[in-house]
Amino acid sequence: MAQLWGGRFTKETDKLVYQFNASISFDRKFYRQDIQGSMAHVKMLAKQKILTEEERDQILEGLSGILRDVENGNLQITEEYEDIHSFVEAVLTQRVGEAGKKLHTGRSRNDQVALDMKLYVRDEIDETDLLLKEFLETLLQIMEENTGTFLPGFTHLQKAQPVTLAHHMGAYFEMFRRDRERLSDIRRRMNLCPLGSGALAGTTYPLDRAYTASLLGFDGPTRNSMDSVSDRDYCIELLSALSLVMMHLSRFSEEIILWNSNEYRFVEIDDAYSTGSSIMPQKKNPDIAELVRGKTGRVYGALMALLTVMKGIPLAYDKDMQEDKEGTFDAIETVKGCVLLFNGMLKTMKFRKDVMERSASRGFTNATDAADYLVNHGIPFRDAHGIIGQLVLLCIEKGISLDELPLAEYQSVCPAFGEDIYEAISMKTCVEKRETYGAPGPGPMQAVIEEYKIYLNERSTL
Ligand code: ARG
Image (tube, rainbow, N blue to C red; front, side, top):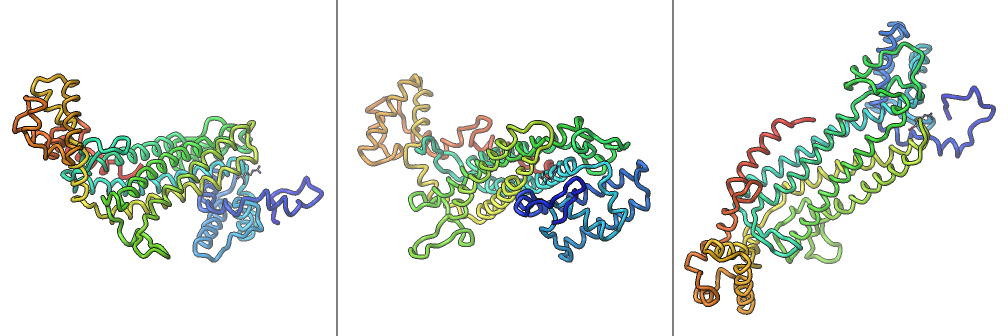
């Protein structure tokens, strides 16, 4: 047990207490950010003449060596230290001697951990954003290839009106685009540097907090030292944004699972992205989509856990906050993994356009258009609705679709029908006539696709 404190204590910490308290098993994850923060801190201390340039250079060299050795596996982060901060400081002191002991001047682990977590979250937001962007690129490609692929649009899981696959994928494009925007909002709001807040009340050293902040790519220093060491809002916001990503992925997964079923057969998941059954040879299961749907639960769980951890904590730092890490780390890894895998699955998935189109032509998805036809012939919509309802019933009795019903039958219910009814209710017409902005018609669809292309080119990073 290597501890940073002890002067005031007359007894060793109980072993179980030590283990219960320690965080190195998980905060080792941000060793890179911890070292990055220490480097900036030391540069600032030297600039302010709190350390000499020689001390600064010794410390910087020591820290780079630690980073290098951890990365190449020559230095193991072991559990004999309480946390990553103690580990780095102890190794530094072993390596560079007296100067190492000065690293923690004007700093507390409270502002240090607040910084590390922010740096980590910021890096992970960037990585998640990149994965989401690649995912949007896949969606856009499917859209471009399928502006003329018809499938039924559903409400209440009942066939409603025909749409295109481009339009359907576009709905997901919008969801994941908003997810990226949420991440970017969070990143912007959190981008103030807590270092220099000390334990809670700042320090008596003449720190240049704005300098440290600029070295670390922050927009400036945080404005209240008590808030700085106790703020985990950004983690909660991140977990909330990640929960939404998972909610969207889960809905999408559910559709893929349905579409992949023998009943729908709209898609075929690539062999590389599906699994078989140990007993039933005919099976090809959509496990990836099911796992993504299932993993949504753990991300929601992390959000609820941290909201609960934070709700009763008096100002300023309390050890409860150490509980911010494992759930956040797990949620981030889960989301990144899910986006990556889902993207791969989607990219390699085959869309059975013929099955989709056949399905769209069944189930009276053109009934609204048949009613609109009558409206165009001077019949009030409410009456038209009733007339088409009767015709649908007739078709159901005969086991045919509206396209197959003879003109004489149409005219026997309403004389306003003419030969052009068949053209008016063809699937192509049904889709192509939907030209309002945001609809599946070719005009608005192309306009939206062009807009998406510009968006993806401009928003290559956050
Ligand atoms: N492991 C701690 C955490 O994650 C670091 C801060 C410790 N500060 C303290 N005063 N014990 O929150």
